[in-house]
Image 1 (cartoon, rainbow, N blue to C red):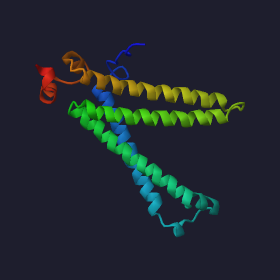
Image 2: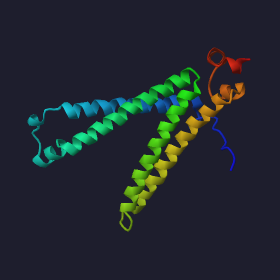
Image 3: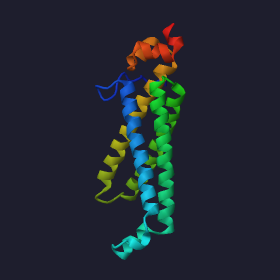
Image 4: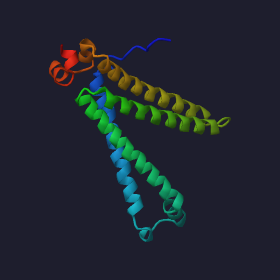
Length: 183
């Protein structure tokens, strides 16, 4: 099996740089919001909750606190890697794009594993088809986004002026950040 074909654009009308920036921007927003919501949950006074007692128990206990802390840490890591990707695209830096690609691949793997375990629990029920469709579509979408990021990484990493230009960079940014390509 040889090297896979590289993408030339994202979603039919974005360049690879724009597609990667969109993915990184969405990850950045998701990461910041996750950290913010985690801090809101952890700092909310438990005594002022006026809802049902069972909901109170599920929102304020040690297990939930641990889950909120873990999700906030994942959100912080997602924010860091999204900033790496944005900087990598702007500075034409394949090392930063590689970090982001590995982060996205790890998250895609674990999310697909989570969806697969949910799908496995629904075997023999009416929900099996829905979960199977969710698993296939979500995994395919995440794989597509990984392919977009990998394609941009490869085009930059090969130092091919035509490939870098086709990825969405103009000549001045290539000359400024990649002196090998401009020669």
